[in-house]
Image 1: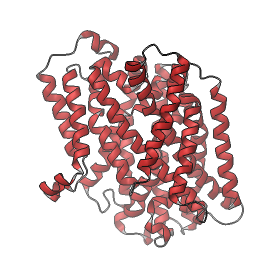
Image 2: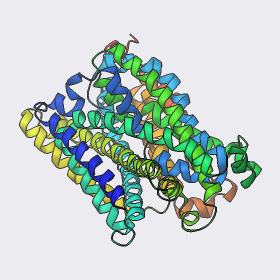
Image 3: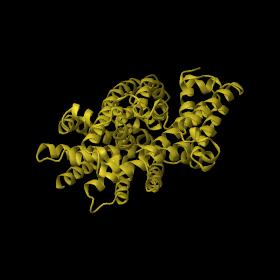
Length: 482
């Protein structure tokens, strides 16, 4: 146990040092929100990778793989498909080069779209941050079961994340992600072959599990696979955290190069996560982890790699890497909505002439406020997988259609964008209410909200656009559409 304590202490200390080294370079609004637009491609790759692969993959995706097998790759595959399209968006996003997605929404549409965008982002990103706290709390409980309950662990992780995030903003987050990304890549890649060997080889894994675990659609079917695929794909296509990284890039070329590295890293790591979880389901089909399968990766590190010597060190590194990745994702998704409240509310409406010093103070206060809100949500999370799909769906339905239209459809209008964001958000939030379950047949109401919310959002965008005044040349020009 002392080894796990030492590894976690070294990781936390390293992250703190990285954050503090960026503090002296954070003096202006641009430094805090977009790292002074100075991030090279190498840093961008790891910060994008670290912000994307968090508890949604390490807990939710792993839980799915433990229960159902390779069908869990549909969740990751949505991100891969989104990344192929993002390669063409990244240079345009860097050329636009503002601070937040609501900046983009106001420039292309109007102020109402900006405000609704802020609301949708706050719902989505604090929800995502909340289940990072759950994941971190679970890991601390696994390591220290006598001293730390999962709930107490959530409080500890929340404090870590809030402090790290508020220190130096985007520069702190991005450079911490480089350290975390390298650690996680090594830990996951090194652990996989050892765990397969511990399970008796791949043939033994195959023999121990149902045949459905190895089928593309598993035991869930095509519709359920699409309910994993679409929210992930559409969240990634419109992900504000990603666009902020592009806004932070040194150049359009650096943004494009980063997407290539991000795609390669994401395909490799998400596949490895799923395979480790499947191996874990063969190694540990019963017992404590079968009741909490979202913990399977950390459980493999603690109990599957627990021999003396190098193997035990590898187990400690795997657990430490998972913990660090969760902290990294929480940093990113906590920082992002804080920039919205500062840039899109405080600076835009309350104090347009605020000094850089005042903006930095307010930015850090917003990180604390949103961190506390996310912590409150985390204490009520029952399923990380369900919570992640809910968060992805809000964003996918409310914002991704209008963000993509901003770059690729000249005819999209401001009124249509407002209607699309409002309807997408409303349907997602409304879908899980008693009214829907009591008045709509179960064959429809029992499905996730992604299909009804996305269809309603896109239909609004298309129909209202054709019946309202087209955008002006000034609205189109920043997006290369004029």
